[in-house]
Length: 233
Image (tube, rainbow, N blue to C red; front, side, top):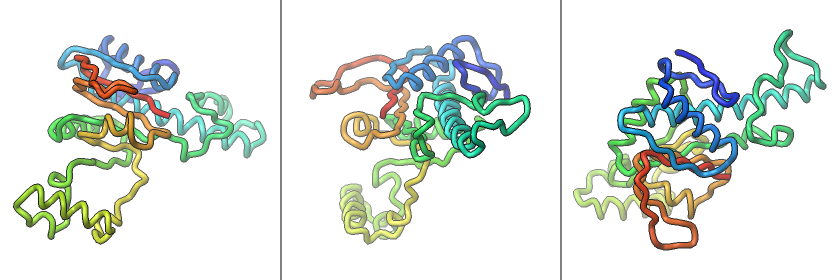
């Protein structure tokens, strides 16, 4: 796959990107490095999902490499590990590498309005060179796999039974869920992450976002963007 350099980040892209795709990814990386929110717009069919995934995952790898280089440099007392390539060339992402640890590597939350859109995102991810640990999150009636719950015909009963089992920790599927995923996909999570849930070391991505609740206001602010990027931390 072609490798391109944008703002000091090496991005693996499935094909040679168009100029509009390079510009799009450059803005994604700029938002991530500056830790600011961004609303990005691009016409239908220009590969927004692919650009969001490749740019954000490349930036995440850059953060990881920066932390690794700093740790190795401290162990070597400033000596170089490879001839002709300094450790400083591994990256200098927007983290305090001197005090950062691997737990500071951000998780990525990709939010969408529908499960069908998440299916498209997963398919796009498979077309890339990136293979992060992923976890798909959704409603109980969509994703619960407990046989006792799924045999219920009413969605209301499914939701109630699933909620009871998870809250009382009587569902062994729920108890065994791994929490160390690098990227999560969720059709409803955007506003929860932005304004209610834990946002430390998280990056929230969303495609086809139509409304965002402004901080301190109960009234949605309506936009017509084709993608939304929120760097949280």
